[in-house]
Length: 215
Image (cartoon, rainbow, N blue to C red; front, side):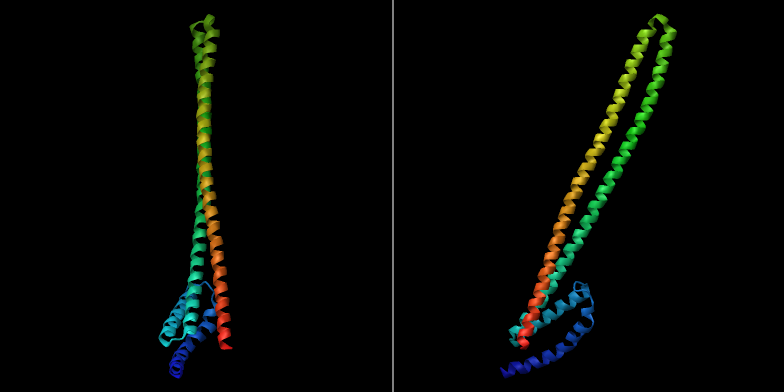
C-alpha cells in the first residue's frame, strides 16, 4: 500500500500543471468548445491509464468520468449543428419552391393575356371576312367566330389552371418536405439538449465523487 502511495505522488505532481491550466484558462471557455473538450478528453485518458497502472480505481474512475463527459458534450454539439443545417435546408427549400411557383403563375398569366389578345384579333378578322363574303351569312359567321373564340379562351384557361395546379402541387410538396426536415431538426435539437443534460449530470456526479474522496 505504501509503495502504491509513493508511486501515486509523482503522477499527482505531474498532473498539477494540467489541473492549473484547466482551472485558470480552459474553464473560461464554453463547456462545449473544441479546445476544452480535447483537453478534458486527454486529461481523462491520462487518468485512466495512470489509474490502471497504479491500481488506483479512484483515479481511473475520475478519468472515465472526464472522458464520458467530453464525449457526451461532443455528441450534443454535433446534434445541434446537424439540426441547424437541416433547419436552414428546409427554409431554403420552401423559399425556392415559392419562387418557382410565383414564376409559373406569372408565366401562365402572361400566356393568358397573349391568348386573349390573339383570340380577339382572330374574332375581328373572322367577322370581317364573313361580312365581306355575304351579308346574309353574317349572323352564322359571327356565331361560328364566337364559338371559335370561346373555344380558344377555354383552352387558354385550362392551360393556365393546369399551370397553377402544378405550381400549387410543387409548393405543397416542398412545404411537406420542409416540415419533415424541421420536425427532424427539432428532434435532433431535443436530443442535443438531453445529451447536454446528461453531460451536466455526469459532471455533477463526478464532482460529488471527488469531493467525497477528499473527505
